[in-house]
Image 1 (cartoon, rainbow over the protein chains, first blue to last red):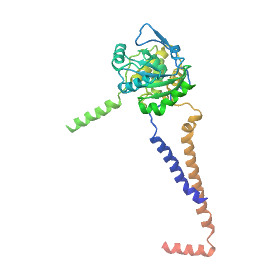
Image 2 (image 1 turned 90 degrees about the vertical axis):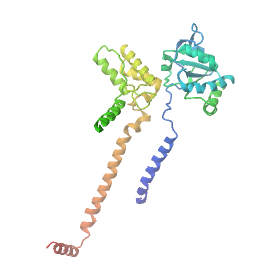
Image 3 (image 1 turned 180 degrees about the vertical axis):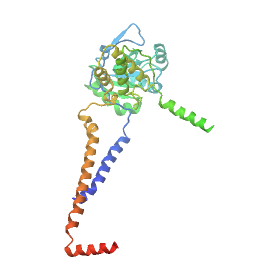
Image 4 (image 1 turned 90 degrees about the horizontal axis):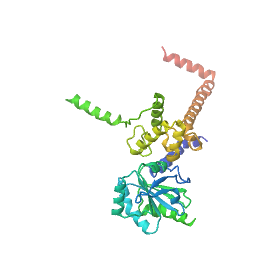
Length: 176
Length: 157
């Protein structure tokens, strides 16, 4: 019994060490989204390429989509863009949210770097971004065919992220 | 010269720490201004993590301040505003997290640890007192006690 008490500090130390060790591999910048499992917020915004066309949440439904929040002022979006082009080429349904951007620059960007988006929502005021809890582009949401947000990824999607984190989830939504 | 450099460096340090974002919002009353200040100081900037939205210069913090100002203008209550932000950014935006199952340890953990510490301290003290007061006082036989007394007397001329 007495000996067991001497082991207590060691046990406490091991417990703390286990927590700290796990902390080494957590990214504090990654916030869990409050929106997972919730419907995509309602919006009524013009399309980037067609100013007279109004897009709503109904346009998202029917088919699982990768909703990608991007902007021309966002440096990492430029890194991500070729990957999105590649994914679109493989038939992935990508919807863009052009977040707090200048529309002319957005059009120029899409012309210069190719347009991977099936739809592109023009969110100049950032109201949709706010409803989505966006805190820094690029952010990408996986939305199922009923318009429910199923997963969120913050940061640049590259081949590895796609392969390890998103591809299987997207396939799951397709198979549902 | 030295003092000038010192003053300058102190000034530089202060200018970076006391740097708060300033917006020019007009409020209907001082009470509303107070509520605004309270809210932006209690809410955390999702982008910059360790700043509240009052101090942050990030564009998102600016948007959130504007949104809070708008909602205050619409006459919404503090809870409604906080709930609105929590619905979008999660509990992360609150510097004061709600008390629920997941945060029980966070709220009561320190008090629990303190109680545990006092418990350990109390056990140690009780045990020590028992050891010194108990056996030591009774284990001396009358002979021994006499010897002890003479020894102590010798030492003290």
